[in-house]
Image (cartoon, rainbow, N blue to C red; front, top):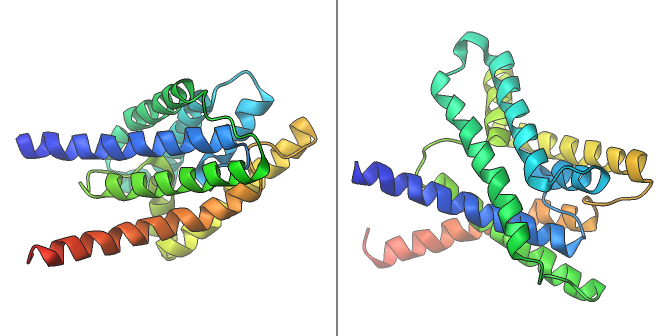
Length: 212
């Protein structure tokens, strides 16, 4: 029981770190990571908050998983819905706690954007360590992989690119400008993955140093 509680705590810690990364990228205003681009755009264009759009988007991802997998869908994965709610609420909480992140120039915007992407990457790495479940976005990519036989990594790239494209088009249609998805989104797409790899290498060195 203690082991399960510890794994859940580690998973939630990773989700919280990701939420703060999302909040900082929104504050930097150079574009968020691909998975948060749509919520960021819609928060600019509507009265919905980043967290509210995040919850709605992720619940939709869970429903799409069910439609794709049908009988192969594992009911246990419905846990992704409360996780999506928690993640969305944490995003709004993180935004509420970070009004002091106010970049004064383009260079500072980039510094916050890079820090935000690194935080998202660290959060992703922490989140996957307990091997409990996936966030709905990754769950949808996994469902597509299972249904089509295509590689998860290939579909993940296509999925992120589709989200960014949809977000950019909506931003231009609804606001006649790019907001929530910009040059920082492209940088984040690369930096998040690089951060996860760096965390893996660091963890391997630490384990090696302990003789594990």
